[in-house]
Length: 468
Ligand code: ADP
Image 1: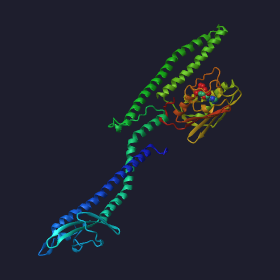
Image 2 (image 1 turned 90 degrees about the vertical axis):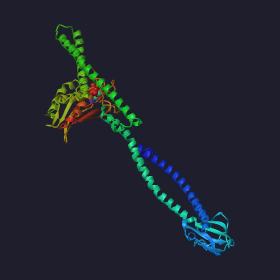
Image 3 (image 1 turned 135 degrees about the vertical axis):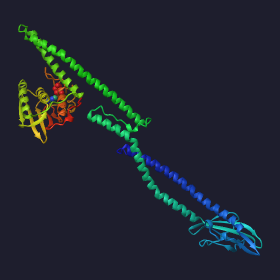
């Protein structure tokens, strides 16, 4: 039962109750009509017998009976008997062979073989004949048979009615639950695409203002409005702050450079200024990444892509990073398929690869190795940056793409380097903005492999994104 959808459960419940109510109502109606039919047959018989007395006259000592007496109105057989049960006139049903006792104005039910008969007698006085009985006989079984036919028709119609009720119930439930379906779809869409601009928008239900589901959807939409505005404000704030911070940082950097240009500066001061300069540079880099990401969130970034030899570009970046790697005696091994072309934004591609390589160096082991691979995969280019460093714990893999997320900081301590936790969210944004995707495989203590895949031809619709 748990696996059934809400729609199915409601339909079954509705159909079950409808069936129960129909059964009860039909049972009551049929039992009432059965009794009514029996009662009606008895009343008709009594009336007919009483009325038929008027049809009997005696003329010149002879019985003169109206032809109506002989007719089978309401299937009632009329006959005339003496008080000694001697048949004088009339009709008796062929199957009714017994002669039950005569009881004045008393309705008798006489069972005979498989049939039941109603018998009604009225005693009356006839000139020259003395007291005679007018007897009316009618078959109860015929009426009951008619009732049974009705019952059988009802039994045949019942399953049809059940199917009809279930279909109507299903359609009705579907219609009623349509807004719920829309709410669910919207929530799933928001979850999947991280797109807060989605709305349920139950336009066609505008006439149903009082409907609880409609109200729920409307409240949900209003909540989304507020959430979206709050997020927009937050994005704007991040963008503004990053923007505003750039000027003071540039001033600090410029001042540091000025100071460092002074050769007469004592060594101790020089070291302090150098430290300030390095930290200011790290901050400047972080601010520019933050600014870029917040602008990307707002859809204000457009890739400036052109068709280029990605293999060559990758070679150059790998060579440039080699001097950084040398500090840790790490060797960068290039396995790059030559002449792979794709439409990429050069600046962003460089940034993406530098981020991956600088991570591989930072989290790689002293004297270790880094492999950079590039190969064609159908209409895509697949790249991989692999290291044999500290690796990433499985539980952290899904989080590393989030902004400012740093896996187990004590373990991943990277002395004095610019590691703010923005690098991989940047990588993800860049690759996805190119219409590609990124993923990682890693084993703690053994190393990591970061993969990226970008299409060789680029689709414009994939230029912007929100990857918070
Ligand atoms: P950070 O600026 O801290 O390097 P990133 O966004 O680039 O931030 O990476 C997020 C986290 O993912 C890092 O703090 C680190 O714990 C983990 N990480 C990234 N690359 C590697 C790697 N090659 N080896 C091990 N851990 C990595």
